[in-house]
Length: 217
Ligand code: GAR
Image 1: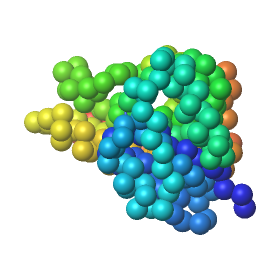
Image 2 (image 1 turned 30 degrees about the horizontal axis):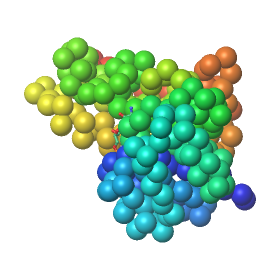
Image 3 (image 1 turned 180 degrees about the horizontal axis):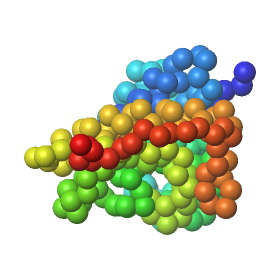
Image 4 (image 1 turned 180 degrees about the vertical axis):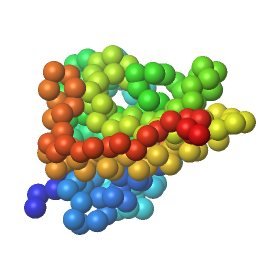
């Protein structure tokens, strides 16, 4: 079985990259990471990637005259490594529409909220300020608008009494590490496709587990 070749751009600690790498460490998993690429020289995730035996590269955005030039260099490096699918994992730079269109439906992102709520930064603080009962995370195909695009998978995380942004972030991150590998598996197996800007699934299922918070009496 040919495994789908994945490239993972990061900017920081790389815990989602590591969750994907752990899944890919199983030879039966339908994808493999062929390159982890950072725009930050000292990103901790680079060391973690090397510990998995994964090839790494750094492309510092500061060395480029504009976003388009940087994005073109990123695409060239990913393609040199044979990347077929890009999984953004805490990559904290916006890509140009040209980059996003080049990788259309071959570009996934993980975002720490139940999109389309709380696009952008500081999602946990904003979820607490808004008083939502259910927060969570989303894996989605990327479109040029910030944190926009067809949703592949989500996990809801109830807000607990007395939560701080840090506590909530920790529980959401644990869910990120579960759903990103699961979503990658579905994409790599061809179990999802994009139709009319929504994801449709090859197989039906019936999830009648109620996610209600506070719990029903
Ligand atoms: C993760 O929580 C990820 O969802 C978030 O950055 C963190 C990166 O952590 N991404 C975004 O906010 C993108 N809009 P990691 O480097 O440990 O995976």
